[in-house]
Amino acid sequence: MKIAVKLAFDERGALRLLNWLAQENARILRARPELPGLYDSGVVYRREVDETWCDYINLLAQGHEDCDGLAAARAGELLARGSQALGPKDPGYRLAKRRRLDSIEAEVMLRTRARPDEIGLYHCIVRYRVGRRWFRDDPSARLGMYERKPPVRDRGDFPELVSGEALPLVAGEEQP
Image (cartoon, rainbow, N blue to C red; front, side):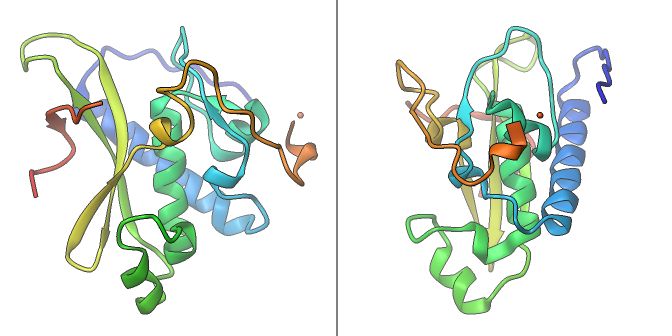
Protein backbone atom coordinates (compact mmCIF):
# COMPACT_ATOMS: atom_id res chain seq x y z
CA MET A 1 0.00 0.00 0.00
CA LYS A 2 1.26 3.47 -0.81
CA ILE A 3 0.18 6.43 1.35
CA ALA A 4 1.32 9.98 0.66
CA VAL A 5 1.20 12.70 3.30
CA LYS A 6 2.05 16.31 2.48
CA LEU A 7 3.20 18.47 5.36
CA ALA A 8 4.42 21.96 5.99
CA PHE A 9 7.87 21.27 7.44
CA ASP A 10 8.19 21.51 11.19
CA GLU A 11 11.13 19.94 13.05
CA ARG A 12 9.11 18.67 15.97
CA GLY A 13 6.38 17.29 13.70
CA ALA A 14 8.94 15.52 11.51
CA LEU A 15 10.57 14.00 14.59
CA ARG A 16 7.21 12.79 15.92
CA LEU A 17 6.48 11.07 12.59
CA LEU A 18 9.94 9.53 12.28
CA ASN A 19 9.77 8.22 15.83
CA TRP A 20 6.29 6.84 15.15
CA LEU A 21 7.85 5.04 12.15
CA ALA A 22 10.62 3.72 14.44
CA GLN A 23 7.92 2.33 16.77
CA GLU A 24 6.14 0.74 13.80
CA ASN A 25 9.43 -0.80 12.65
CA ALA A 26 9.92 -2.19 16.16
CA ARG A 27 6.48 -3.83 15.99
CA ILE A 28 7.36 -5.40 12.63
CA LEU A 29 10.72 -6.68 13.87
CA ARG A 30 9.17 -8.20 17.00
CA ALA A 31 6.53 -9.95 14.88
CA ARG A 32 9.10 -11.14 12.29
CA PRO A 33 12.26 -12.16 14.19
CA GLU A 34 13.61 -13.89 11.08
CA LEU A 35 14.14 -10.53 9.36
CA PRO A 36 17.77 -9.45 9.13
CA GLY A 37 19.15 -6.57 11.16
CA LEU A 38 19.70 -3.34 9.24
CA TYR A 39 23.47 -3.74 8.99
CA ASP A 40 23.17 -7.35 7.79
CA SER A 41 20.33 -6.71 5.34
CA GLY A 42 22.20 -5.46 2.27
CA VAL A 43 20.37 -2.12 2.42
CA VAL A 44 22.50 0.86 1.39
CA TYR A 45 22.27 4.62 1.74
CA ARG A 46 20.90 6.42 -1.30
CA ARG A 47 19.82 10.04 -1.44
CA GLU A 48 16.20 10.64 -2.49
CA VAL A 49 14.81 13.34 -4.73
CA ASP A 50 11.33 13.07 -3.20
CA GLU A 51 11.04 12.11 0.45
CA THR A 52 9.54 8.66 0.87
CA TRP A 53 9.43 7.05 4.28
CA CYS A 54 8.83 3.33 4.33
CA ASP A 55 8.48 0.67 6.97
CA TYR A 56 11.10 -2.03 7.55
CA ILE A 57 9.56 -4.55 5.11
CA ASN A 58 9.46 -2.00 2.30
CA LEU A 59 12.96 -0.78 3.18
CA LEU A 60 14.29 -4.31 2.71
CA ALA A 61 12.40 -4.75 -0.56
CA GLN A 62 13.62 -1.39 -1.87
CA GLY A 63 17.23 -2.08 -0.84
CA HIS A 64 18.10 1.55 -0.14
CA GLU A 65 16.96 4.60 1.83
CA ASP A 66 18.24 7.98 2.89
CA CYS A 67 19.00 9.17 6.40
CA ASP A 68 15.45 9.48 7.71
CA GLY A 69 14.34 5.98 6.75
CA LEU A 70 17.61 4.41 7.86
CA ALA A 71 17.47 6.18 11.23
CA ALA A 72 13.84 5.09 11.80
CA ALA A 73 14.81 1.51 10.87
CA ARG A 74 17.81 1.46 13.21
CA ALA A 75 15.90 3.01 16.11
CA GLY A 76 13.14 0.41 15.59
CA GLU A 77 15.70 -2.37 15.58
CA LEU A 78 17.20 -1.22 18.89
CA LEU A 79 13.73 -0.92 20.42
CA ALA A 80 12.73 -4.39 19.23
CA ARG A 81 15.91 -6.40 19.62
CA GLY A 82 17.81 -4.70 22.42
CA SER A 83 21.33 -5.98 22.98
CA GLN A 84 21.00 -8.35 20.00
CA ALA A 85 20.94 -5.29 17.71
CA LEU A 86 24.38 -4.16 18.87
CA GLY A 87 27.69 -5.48 17.60
CA PRO A 88 31.02 -5.62 19.44
CA LYS A 89 32.16 -2.31 17.91
CA ASP A 90 28.97 -0.43 18.89
CA PRO A 91 29.18 1.85 21.93
CA GLY A 92 27.39 0.35 24.93
CA TYR A 93 27.64 -3.19 23.54
CA ARG A 94 29.27 -4.83 26.59
CA LEU A 95 26.91 -3.26 29.10
CA ALA A 96 23.83 -4.08 27.00
CA LYS A 97 24.98 -7.72 26.65
CA ARG A 98 25.77 -7.97 30.35
CA ARG A 99 22.31 -6.65 31.22
CA ARG A 100 20.68 -8.83 28.51
CA LEU A 101 18.51 -5.94 27.41
CA ASP A 102 15.45 -7.04 25.43
CA SER A 103 14.87 -3.44 24.34
CA ILE A 104 17.09 -0.39 24.14
CA GLU A 105 15.57 3.07 24.41
CA ALA A 106 16.23 4.67 21.02
CA GLU A 107 14.96 7.57 18.94
CA VAL A 108 15.58 9.49 15.75
CA MET A 109 17.15 12.91 16.15
CA LEU A 110 17.80 15.72 13.67
CA ARG A 111 21.02 17.61 13.10
CA THR A 112 21.65 20.66 10.95
CA ARG A 113 24.00 23.54 10.36
CA ALA A 114 21.10 25.92 9.68
CA ARG A 115 20.30 28.67 12.15
CA PRO A 116 17.01 28.42 14.03
CA ASP A 117 15.31 31.00 11.79
CA GLU A 118 16.53 29.44 8.52
CA ILE A 119 15.43 26.47 6.47
CA GLY A 120 18.39 24.18 5.87
CA LEU A 121 19.52 20.65 5.26
CA TYR A 122 18.84 18.16 8.02
CA HIS A 123 20.50 14.86 8.78
CA CYS A 124 18.83 12.11 10.80
CA ILE A 125 20.77 9.92 13.18
CA VAL A 126 19.83 7.68 16.10
CA ARG A 127 20.51 8.16 19.75
CA TYR A 128 20.12 5.28 22.17
CA ARG A 129 20.59 4.74 25.88
CA VAL A 130 22.32 1.88 27.64
CA GLY A 131 22.28 2.33 31.39
CA ARG A 132 22.64 6.03 32.10
CA ARG A 133 24.66 6.86 28.97
CA TRP A 134 23.36 8.04 25.63
CA PHE A 135 25.14 6.97 22.46
CA ARG A 136 24.72 7.96 18.81
CA ASP A 137 24.64 5.89 15.66
CA ASP A 138 24.65 7.21 12.10
CA PRO A 139 23.26 4.42 9.90
CA SER A 140 23.64 6.52 6.74
CA ALA A 141 27.38 6.87 7.31
CA ARG A 142 27.68 3.16 8.08
CA LEU A 143 25.75 2.24 4.92
CA GLY A 144 27.65 4.30 2.38
CA MET A 145 26.68 7.99 2.59
CA TYR A 146 30.28 9.17 2.45
CA GLU A 147 31.42 6.68 -0.18
CA ARG A 148 31.54 7.68 -3.85
CA LYS A 149 29.78 4.46 -4.84
CA PRO A 150 27.35 2.56 -2.63
CA PRO A 151 28.92 -0.49 -1.03
CA VAL A 152 28.15 -3.79 -2.73
CA ARG A 153 26.25 -5.90 -0.27
CA ASP A 154 24.89 -9.41 -0.64
CA ARG A 155 21.10 -9.58 -0.20
CA GLY A 156 21.75 -12.79 1.73
CA ASP A 157 19.01 -15.30 2.42
CA PHE A 158 16.12 -12.92 1.85
CA PRO A 159 15.44 -12.89 -1.93
CA GLU A 160 11.70 -13.06 -1.22
CA LEU A 161 11.88 -9.53 0.21
CA VAL A 162 12.60 -8.05 -3.17
CA SER A 163 8.38 -7.87 -4.09
CA GLY A 164 32.78 14.59 8.72
CA GLU A 165 32.35 16.38 11.28
CA ALA A 166 29.55 16.38 13.88
CA LEU A 167 26.82 18.86 13.16
CA PRO A 168 25.30 20.96 15.92
CA LEU A 169 22.16 19.56 17.44
CA VAL A 170 18.85 21.22 16.63
CA ALA A 171 16.01 19.00 17.79
CA GLY A 172 15.40 15.74 19.57
CA GLU A 173 18.03 15.80 22.28
CA GLU A 174 19.44 17.84 25.08
CA GLN A 175 23.20 17.96 25.04
CA PRO A 176 24.64 15.17 27.26
